[in-house]
Length: 293
Image 1 (cartoon, rainbow, N blue to C red):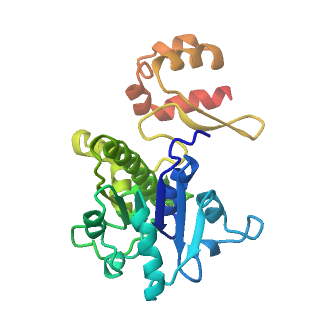
Image 2 (cartoon, rainbow, N blue to C red; image 1 turned 120 degrees about the horizontal axis):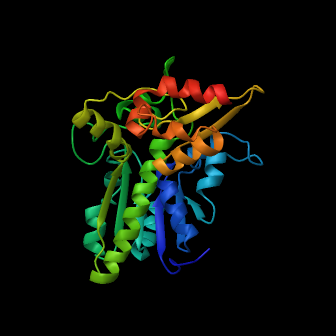
């Protein structure tokens, strides 16, 4: 792997998933990452013990880092953190809302002392608004953002199988930190980055929102099917197994009809000539496909 961030020092007061995702990706790119944990350790260490006694999430997100346990209620440990941050290029934190400020490490204060510093705070709901002081959890944000309303099938809603809101926030923050490093290279000045689980996932929800707001289409829970693409999903075969495929464009549809279904003329059937037409006649299309498989 290329070590493009070699020489960059990242100090991260972190726990769980979102902030460790950011610092982990920076470590992968060659940055020196010092992970600051509470005396009992990051609670993500205890999510499970399935990877040689370690938690799967913790192993995934914390490779390549150095770690130090600090009691941030103890003045001597706060002094250690202050010395590290004074040398850092990037400072990341995802403590409870307001906690880092109460400890004396408010991002504005840190950047006033060191204008080159890039600070990144990850929260549940952002720095503003009525929910700014609330904690958030992945399941709550999946529901509040509408993701769970479009996930699942006719039997009911479902949670996405991984902590997608935490991961989305981590990905968004990682992109912003990289952009801030590029900007600092041009201006010599750092910046503050604020990312929330809710806003990161809400951005991902723009497609169903736009479809509803402008097209009046209420998203459906489609299981493995796609709400606006057809054919798409799992189709049962004669041997009791299933085949999974998705048709992304008209060229693929024509090839699928000719080479897989053995019915090239089907591609020009008015019911199926365009993707929108195929979605509108999904039941008829699925019946034709299932008859072949």
